[in-house]
Length: 334
Ligand code: FAD
Image 1: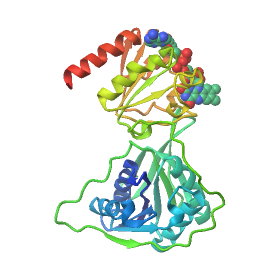
Image 2: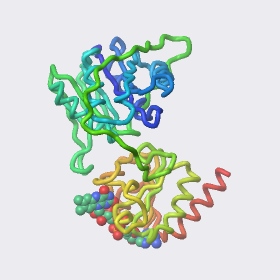
Image 3: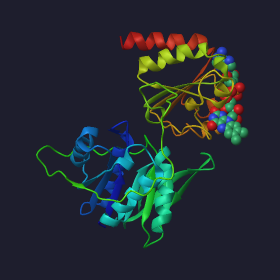
Image 4: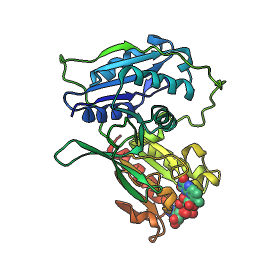
């Protein structure tokens, strides 16, 4: 079945987020060979803000039409402006489905847009299935803080609004060179009066790698014992090209900032490799990382629950194991 799919290709700091390409890959599969994939990007300042380059990147990876909404109201994230922009894109495209990344803004926009369009909404999708011989589509999403997975499908005749969890679905691949690439058009919309204005942003993390999209995460828990105790973890993460995360207990103890918290009330991560250091494995922590592809746990308690979900467990003192790990990484990747 041919579908028309619209992707909200989220940008941050003037660049497309990786999840935008993952949503685009999912859109291409959902659209089918004869379907159409549209992407919409928000910009303020047009080419100066890199929108044209980002549109070209989306077109080169399978977007048939890329809509650029360029308006001063989109300069800083304002939910009412972005929801209105998506509403205009839906009006222009009349899609069967809207896909967004399950990011902070995607989580906020998806239900707003779904409600405004009387669409169905499935959030935090980690897998998409084609069921049976036909073309019925269902979606897997975690439930009860990751304790269970649910598989849901939309009722017939409704528009779909779906958020996809970063790092779970394969990104759209570049189209063969010389082949057909998509077109870029302007999306006109009337920005609503903003109810709040952004005066400034104070960043709490300076790490170049976004924790939610990192391929490798080195996380520390209460077992790290102090802010200084995080230094070996930071060195290991740097050597591996990863990001540093933490359990809530480590944040509560003041060893690190809450922006690093992973879990039910923190960030959800799905890296290729998760290294848990001095983390016991409470269910609320697992909710934020149990879909990681490979989990290594370092804990001195052989009965720590984290070992029940770890692919590799190291029973030992993290202050001895992490430096050895780092030494080995540096030997292999000088
Ligand atoms: P602990 O449970 O104290 O474990 C420390 C571990 O370190 C132990 O297993 C110990 O054996 C090991 N250790 C100690 N020293 C060493 C050493 N030198 N070398 C190796 N291992 C060592 N937690 C989250 O993480 N994220 C959340 O989002 C979250 N949300 C929550 C929401 C609610 C509503 C509630 C009630 C709780 C939430 N929690 C969350 C808290 C959660 O229940 C746990 O308390 C917390 O995850 C424990 O963190 P921890 O594993 O670092 O600490």
